[in-house]
Image 1: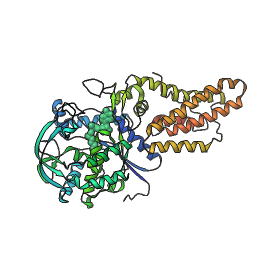
Image 2: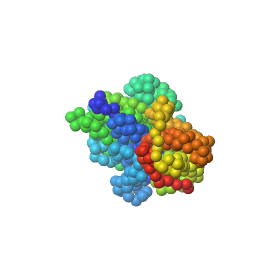
Image 3: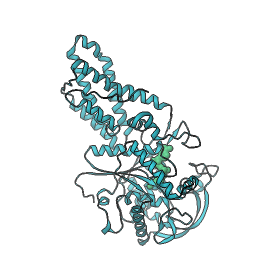
Image 4: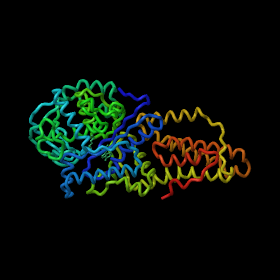
Amino acid sequence: MKKNTRKTFYITTPIYYVNDQPHIGHAYSTLVADVLTRFHTMKGDSTWFLVGTDEHGSKVQEAALKAGQQPQEFVDRISSYFRNTWKSLNITYNDFIRTTEERHKKSVCAFMQQLYDAGYIYEGVYEGLYCTGCERFYTTKELNEKGECPDHKRKPELIKEKNYFFKLKDFIPDITRDIESDRMEIYPPERKNEMLALLQNGLDDFSVSRERVTWGIPLPFDSSQRIYVWVEALQNYISALGYFANIKEQNEKFSTFWPADIQVIGKDITKFHCIFWPALLKAVELPLPKKFIVTGFFTVDGQKMSKTLGNVIDPNDLVKDFGVDGARYLILSQFAVGADGDIKAQRFIEKYNADLANNLGNLVSRVSHMIMKYCNGVIIRTAQDTKHFEKISREIYNSIETGKLDVALSAIFQDGFSILNKEIEEAKPWELAKHDTVALSAHLSRWAQHIEFYGKLLSPFLPETSQKIVQAFSGPSVQKSEILFPKK
Ligand code: MSP
């Protein structure tokens, strides 16, 4: 049971592999979680936002070898790129977990022992096709016509080894019910249906250890094996809260924040999160996450992002080119949450100029200039249609709460800023200044108050910009602010 009297909100992102540096896809899921965190904090909830890096397994070990570094040295370096990137994107995480940390290892070992003691682990031999890129086994049915992994386009390796297995099958009926009833919600619905179809087709028990991998956490009950990277990685969501099987050592943070309110994941990792993870949790009698928000996949100029093609978009470059909030906007406004999409790199400038420089930036600057010029800087506060404001806030809050961030953003930009700019064009305040100053000041007062209103709503998305707008328009007189988004 959650103890806090304030509503709590716990949100997580996937922990990213440190085989390579962060790209715009990683930034997207992290930003989605950041917006939701900021939104809940704004509402007064006690929030906890976890991010982190997934540092074990053959994929990372191979990358270290290729870079000519020891695995630990290598993961330290790459993990810090993720940390720095989140800093430069103004991500307000509370904790950054690394799976090579002692706190994680300790919690995971206790969890694995708990599974074993409860009788959910058995020994067997696994023979299967393994793709190191995905760190998972494939059935032949799942491969493409050339017998390759559909994601990495390379042939998986045939592996036969002793493994320990987890009795997934015992939990399938229960998990099916939890998903069907939305007790554990999966958004968007296509992903929910996809999981239900998988469960209906039947799933085999999965292995929780690997014999040949050396870069990993030893199994507590058989140290000749390493814990399968996915099985330990999933546990980061509770190890970071200080989960420990022995209740006496339990961390208060765990009892406050678990179960997670939202786990943001990508569509490539739904089976692990929406089926395997809940089964593991059920086996140790822990409650399940309340909701998964599943994001889609980006391609860049029609191609999968890859170093060889040279089309990987580094979020740090976007920050350099467009500023923090510019980068946040360009990443978040790409597609509907959950949808796949193709990013056209050269369109960034176009979108930045259209939405940020010309629409929002221009609106803020022209209205504050006019208030200075025609009203000596004084913002006359008149009664506004509060019902209308309440209705809009409710709609926008509701979109954010249900994960439709794109709908909320476009309501703020299109129904808010664009309409205000249009109103200015139609009202022609420069004409009114010559013959109807009463009408002019009524308009300016309305525009200033609307900008302040929409500016506040922007805060989970573009926190710095929102603050500047609110600062400029919330006092008795308009404060001169720097140009928000210089034209490119
Ligand atoms: N380490 C695992 C996750 C373990 S969570 C317990 C992993 N890492 S990953 O580095 O491959 O990143 C996975 C996540 O990054 C995806 O699920 C998705 O959220 C995001 N993306 C990675 N590439 C992406 C795109 N091309 N487009 C959009 N998001 C993508 O899997």
